[in-house]
Amino acid sequence: MKPHSHRLSQSPEGSPRPAKPKEIASADWSIALLPGLSTDDHTRLIACGVHTTLQLFNQGKTAEARNHLAGQLQIPIRHINKWVALADLARIPGVGCQYCGLLLHAGVASPTQLAQTPLDRLHRQMLKLQVATLQRRDLCPEIGEVEQWSRQARMLG
Image (cartoon, one colour):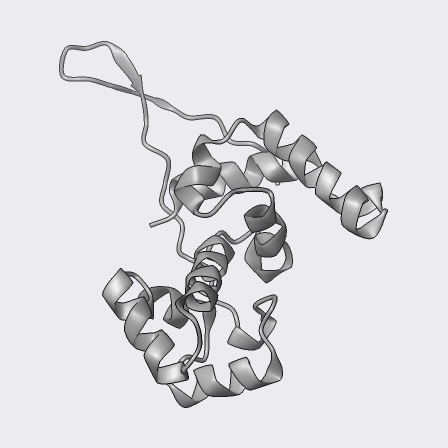
């Protein structure tokens, strides 16, 4: 995908200003693809009407809603908090369920935080995690891909 340049529009005063980036839709994945869910967790989420990552994200937007879901599932709130954070990161199309866990373990808990994190530092942290856990440098996404995620995070609607 080619990087796009921001066109300049005229402000009321006549000076150029960057055009706002277009919004993109949140990606939505089967809940079965969310990393870290056991088969039992998956089954219980389905029983509560949560079939996709976007449904989980929407059902867990508030602390009260997350507490309610934890009560329904009879699991500790920390699991729900983690799953909702993963579902939030999975909304970024380039991240999805493939890299949301890596981002979370690298210290990024939301698209907003990703958009504000210095990319070189984040990329180094992700590379360090990949090497430490999998002994594989080649599985770490390239810096250009991480830059695309950051751009998508800023454009999420």
